[in-house]
Length: 402
Image 1: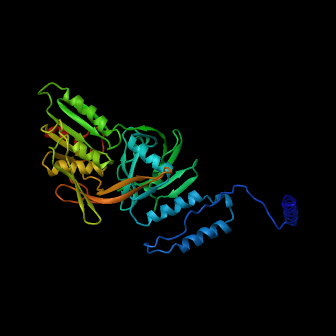
Image 2: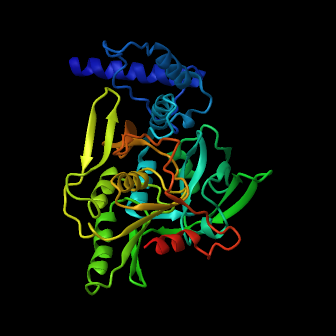
Image 3: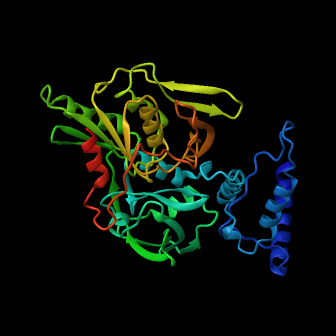
């Protein structure tokens, strides 16, 4: 009897459902359906904030928005998190969805597909920190300090101004598949009108450190502080160490257009020139505490005469290293004033591949100076020959000082 009862119930429900469907009162639609799974709507008791409006908007969108296929919960959550982080008004504190987080790591690893521009901010405006030598951007005449006002990519269907754009968002738009094009509108100091340039993307490979021996002087080019910096730096110093005794006259450390990278990389390389125990940089945290980063190894170039070359594209970790070498009277600095980035970002990864970079501290030179938006002024100011860029006046001056 129990079996027959459930069969009758099932037949009634099926018949009634069919009737409602025929009358148009019951509609079935599973096309492009993505359930918005919410795990927890409770606000932490210790948090002085009301999330009711957030959930009201979330529910309204899911109930009433016309294009249900566009309601991608994952994208909506990413957008909400990005907006929350962006409200801090700090261009270097950013949330990175999985693809953008991967791009950031590829950059520090030294290989990616793009146009060869290291990006930063000048007074919260997206700007070029460094055009990487030999890349499409460099060949097209992009210069350090250029403001990027507008980005257009027909394949990605992007045509937008950069006002309010985060650094990862800009990187994600400008990078792309090798052979594709991106169009940039640039503003340059001294130029009345913006300029528009089209760049074709290529595979960009950047070595952290290279060395050239010239007339007994080792010219060490340090391009970034990334994943392979320590290994490539060691190989470069091995070449210097292999020179016959008495042949090495000195070292030029060229950090022009070095946008920075890992802080601990700057501390480690400082140990090549400074004795163990010397202060390289201090991290000043929001709660008033301070952590001192000191040299903890014995370098191989401790007594070698040294000159450092910097320019407006030298930023962050490059400024840390230059500042430490000057403050300990270890080197003269040649070139022009550096970029001026004085904050420390801590990267964190999440299980889904996303990440976040959080500004956790200011960094201070050994003399106590904070160089944010100020930069480091060289001991000997030398500008490049604008009429003939092959005439490297800055490098020539560094060699003369040695």
